[in-house]
Figure 1: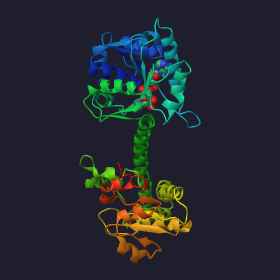
Figure 2: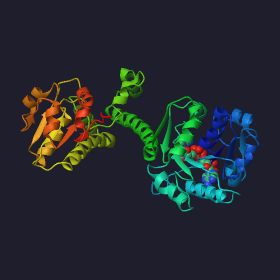
Figure 3: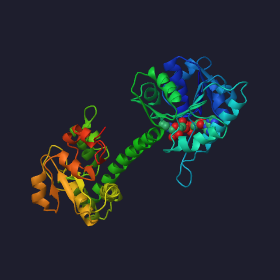
Figure 4: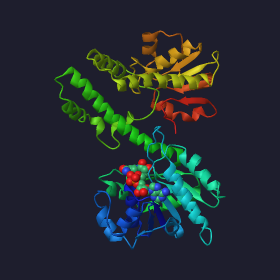
Length: 422
Ligand SMILES: NC(=O)c1ccc[n+]([C@@H]2O[C@H](COP(=O)([O-])OP(=O)(O)OC[C@H]3O[C@@H](n4cnc5c(N)ncnc54)[C@H](O)[C@@H]3O)[C@@H](O)[C@H]2O)c1
């Protein structure tokens, strides 16, 4: 049996959705008495399609509104926490409702006639990475519980959207389980098996971070569109909705997974002939019209920061007189174009720091690179040679060959700048 604590948009949807998909009894509790009263009278204090009909269908049978935490958790083996995690005045996440809910739950568990054999606490509220392990797990430990021994703890971020909460919950794209103990994660996996969607068991910090990655990306995209609308207004005679509708016709948005996902993936920066110069140009052009684009400025700055970050990682693994390997010189795989290539900047930063033994290899672009930049580096005849002779090797371009030859890297220091290795 399952308990759901906190019955706002997420908790009510979770409770009714689990009742619907699993056919089991859900014990639901909210600290707000008014909300509990409303739910028991089959009323919902907010508008969300489909919840009313499912509350009417399940309230009192599969969905039991409880008036105390003790009542809610008495029968439950798995307890979902869906309380709010608002922003505090300092901008940090206010975890007090979540911590209070967990403490109240632990108080109630202590008052049970006998200790539950292995309750699993699931944090569904959105919490910053490391919260479940660093802020919730200690509450359990302080009561003598040991995760993995007599209690389970997991994070399970929720991706539903208000307005389509019901279908998003009952037919999610994927389920993410942030694992802390294997028994807890297994119980959740079995519970979600009924949903017939991909269920990913990942580290708890990863699960927590995915949720923020998702929302921050959406926020960035919206601000990007708005930033461009402000630039367009300054220049004038630009039909900005039309610009975006035409942008949406780019075939990289289509397909599954859409090719655009290649661009929403970490690496060591964008390069090539177009992205750096055109982004810089738009930033400068907007400035000429009196609009300083903070977003484009940040986009360009992050592209420098990531290269410096990669160089920090390289220099932490080698001394200046040791050989440093660079795998990939072209700005992207399947191309011999080296204009604006990230490899050139990374090599430049290494030379600036006194690293004078650099050995590079690229399946196609070595002649172009040599001819274009004339940098004081050596060129290797193969990936094998780079790996063999270098103290540390860095994958800068995601050529297929570098992924295929990953058996060569065993026991070697490799910095996977493009995250191509499994
Ligand atoms: N709203 C969304 O679209 C959405 C989507 C995904 C994730 N989330 C996340 O899910 C969480 C819940 O969001 P929401 O929109 O449902 O919030 P909400 O404010 O609508 O609901 C939270 C509920 O928790 C109850 N509560 C607070 N403290 C409690 C306690 N100690 N014990 C029991 N109940 C308590 C409140 O009374 C309230 O009814 C947040 O972390 C939010 O960021 C929200």
